[in-house]
Amino acid sequence: MSKYREEILRIVDMRGTVTVNEMSRLLGVSGQTIRRVTRPMAEADELSKVHGALVSKKTASDPPFLSRMNVNRDAKVAIAREVARIVQDGDSLAIDTGSTSAFVAQALRARHRLTVVTNSAFVASTLAMIPGNNVSMAGTQLRDHDGAAFDRSTFEVIERMQVDYVVLSASLVDPRKGFLVHEQCEVDVATAMLGHASRAIMAVDHSKFSVQSRKPALRQPALKPGDYLVTDRPLPDTFAGAFPDLTLKIAG
Image 1 (cartoon, rainbow, N blue to C red):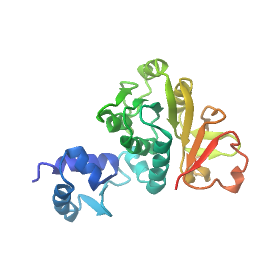
Image 2 (image 1 turned 135 degrees about the vertical axis):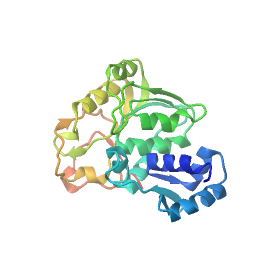
Image 3 (image 1 turned 120 degrees about the vertical axis):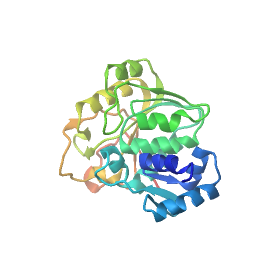
């Protein structure tokens, strides 16, 4: 058994998809080594290999966070890249716990000297080991289904910060009510982060602008004029004029 097999499987299952180049950087070995090690893994159906990427074989019965990362993956990757164009080397930012935010964290690995505060264990682990980054985990008690923290220490850490950007997500977008989520704790963290950030980036894929069977009822705090709305498709006609004060970015 290759000494890299278990580590490759752990990383792929945690992230959902990892390119061969990214995996070679994470493990400090050549891309050729990654391809050689993963060939029998793919033959054994432990993972899939698609266009230079390694894809998890985890199913929808696995933790919900990993399942959500596999939904509208291409859209979330495009949005993440657009966010990474907004954020510059040396910036400071807070990042929430959504699956889109997880992709944003992966895209931000291309940036340098970032100061990051997050209540997501996934986001923290993705950015913490980049040389020059300064990453703070807000919270100590992590939820079992997404590795997010919402305990008292989460808010204590957030209250001590002041950042350039806060990256937020939503479960649904309504033309009248704005950005909606399912849980009050998500609203509370978003409110706290917004209060200590100069500018917000709301990152939501096109599916969030459609009617859903399980409709969230809680409003995220209102964004300020000039804050960013980053999505992957032009807004539906029903949203014409819904966010006139936001800077709209359509990810290509």
